[in-house]
Image 1 (tube, helix red, strand yellow):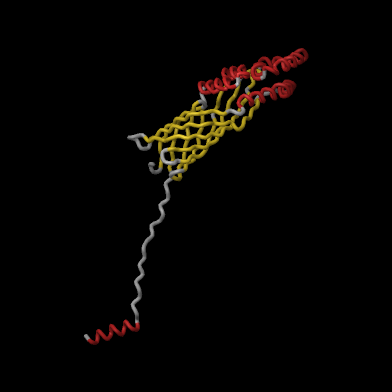
Image 2: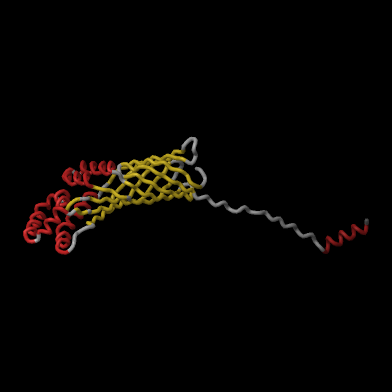
Length: 263
């Protein structure tokens, strides 16, 4: 035993024990899951929408949508504009009877403080008007109609084709609106279906740009006459009818969470 004790003391003195290294595994950070959501709804008084949103963070999301206006919505909008601008009532009454809407697109972002949300987005609205050159001039620019009609009569005697085109050929000028929107609202989850939700938002849409053009102008002499006398007047007046438009809006949408955690 004495021999063993001597050997232990000898080894401790000349070969000190090495400290044991302890390795602690650090867990990898968990990446937040991207939440994709599909929504359909209505944006009174402008259009119906269907879109997709992406929520990479609890408080932030981005969305994209396509809008489809209806005859009822378009008529309601023009009726409100007619009340605001009574001096242009004839133009708005004509537009209500002949305006056609096509799809528009929108995109934006949202901030989500709890169940509330603040939305800022941009969208386009596209409209087309169907009518003959004579109808468009007489209704969109009644103050210029007498001058233009007299010029048409001068051409009619020498070039009947110009008069026939003015009276009979239907043109299709378009107006393309760019709008900026700001909404505040709240999101409600369905009580028994966690992935379903309903959102209600209130806010304003401001028209920040309007582009208008006439797609068909004829050819040759007719084309030059229309381009010089009809197109500038019609496109300018159509642009003015929607310029500076500020619309209060109410949005109601139904959403379905496609992927990601439920919040």
